[in-house]
Image 1 (tube, helix red, strand yellow):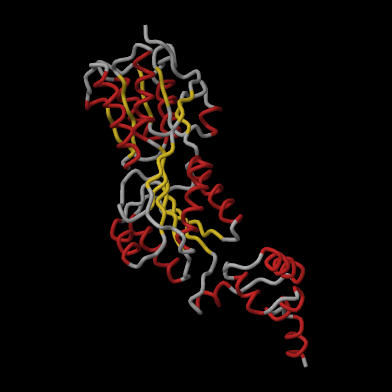
Image 2: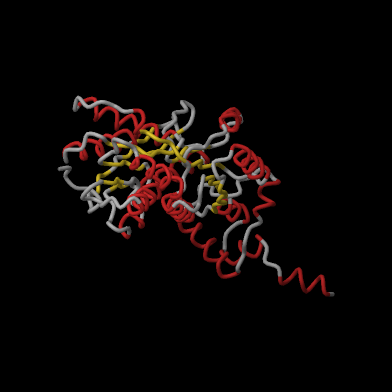
Length: 339
């Protein structure tokens, strides 16, 4: 008797079909994001909401159907830019009725491999890999298995994958050209060990060459993603016999480290040292002084990445694309003319 009562209480696909006044196959098509007339689709969605019906993702996976789930692997959720990307991707995916599973890999290849393996077991429909995915073997396996994948904020090209990224070369070039216009010639770079930073350094080098300025390799330093490491390297640069008069930091967190180093070394910013960041995150606006930086159009990039992934999942993508969005120089009070 208890089983009978329970079965009556549990909403099924048949209940949804009856409530919406449509066939079971129509409900199934709506659940699996297949083409259905807008009126019928809305009736089904309204019935599902009214009956609090939630289709089983696991059941869909086991039957080989789509699970309406995206795997989003990012390097460091503590980075404000990456956190904003996660939010934007999640918001956009939800507009399509997709869920997002977010995994933070800490720039570790073994974690990338483990998370991809786990998410493939869960039958996610596709992946967005963000910010310098390091495990090339995993990427090649996804490509060979025809798994839909989009690279987001990744400058390293893969001919068989669609990529959405900001023009890091142009961002590095414009920052450097701006500092040169202020009279700086000894410009240091504090970078991360990833493809985005390498492109920014390439832009930096191009701007120096066009102004007939020497590129000093000792002024280009590479660190991890922490403000503490950037602070240590910036202090060493400031303590040298011929210190830089300006520093380009390849993200805003590194720029905060440089600001702390300047304070520790009693160097005035921007009167004695100009410092720039990259990304235009919230901390760039609230730092003291506020940072000159480069704005990355996160919302546009993330929306395009999700749109393109959904197209691949639904078989609508005809070819792979390389989408390069333009950065924007944001001038604030951390830079000034060199005297």
